[in-house]
Length: 344
Image 1 (cartoon, rainbow, N blue to C red):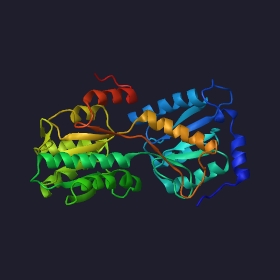
Image 2 (image 1 turned 135 degrees about the vertical axis):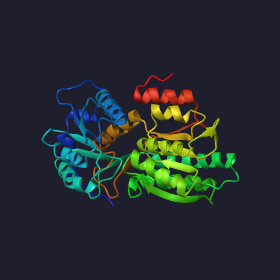
Image 3 (image 1 turned 90 degrees about the vertical axis):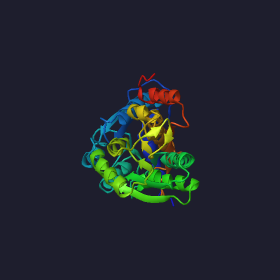
């Protein structure tokens, strides 16, 4: 059921925005729209690339200015940044927030004062503002299915035992990564054993210890979904320390590992035929940035409701990078385009 702002409220929001909101491909104007582009940590290469693309794309397509609001990997800073929207004269904001409850009052205040608002990755309960998410679920499902197929083909007498390493209590990680991965594996082998999602939220060092303990307690584990690239560093280190983490010319021997946040470092391992890291979810900063910017203008133009129950959900693209189903040259081209690398 929609929680409408009302005709008068919508009219006030639209009238408050500069005329450039409705224009496409124009040259910059003195009163161009000002967009707050929130990122959780601007030191992260994905978020750097996102912001760079958002700034260029918004100016070229809409004549709008984009300003980075860096959360500095600190939920308090992210929340405080919301309070700066009105003082800094922002017309629009696409948020990236870790503490939704703390952010709620500031978000509702900004909406009431005519700021066009949306959020990235996680909904902010009690606000009804639109959400943009990467299409992680379909990629997680596909990776799970492909891993199961490859394991069964190479090791038909060794039952599948899977585990996920990530954030077991995080709703969006569960719905986008953990749950669809399990469904993908089970679609190939309904008898597969699932050890569940182990809490690796404390980072790569903690993950290394978790995996070191896991392979002692359950040496039969053979499909591992490491749900972030920094966690994968710890995962692979522990596997190698235990004499695992290997393949024989691309044929699974000890296990198959999948990751998230495909980057130049992961590419070296994925396309190494003797490493068990063989898949990763590629999250494209360019397409993600464009989706977030387009989402704001769709709200301003009345194509998407600013406030609704349930909130509007828009998916940005995600990609499956796989040793078995994507050529190395194609993966290199993808990285070069999205991140500005120069991989040959």
